[in-house]
Length: 80
Image (cartoon, rainbow, N blue to C red; front, side, top):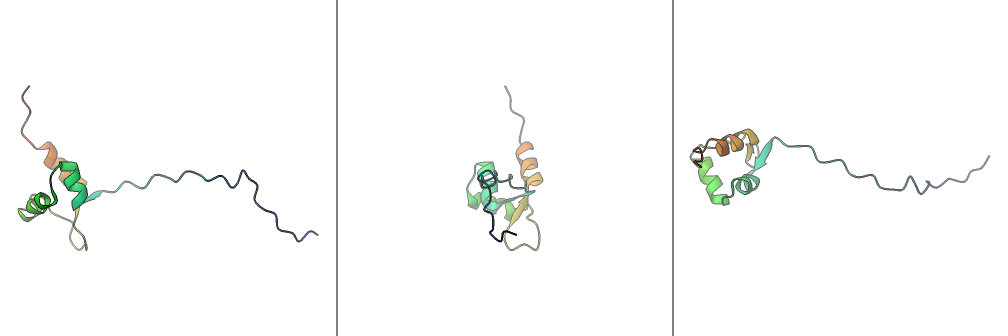
């Protein structure tokens, strides 16, 4: 019996591409500001005015993507 350990073959050493990160259902305040194209203070003002309702009980404010996209889509219709 051979007690030597075998090293992995070179083909097994090829790194597999990492899977894409799971899609989140929320945005941070920074991500919301980026999506809306506004500043962070503007997002905080919208939260204070209760336009956005962050998820309760979290250390950092997280806004549901549904709310942010509904806000974007609720604007006045564009006239051509």
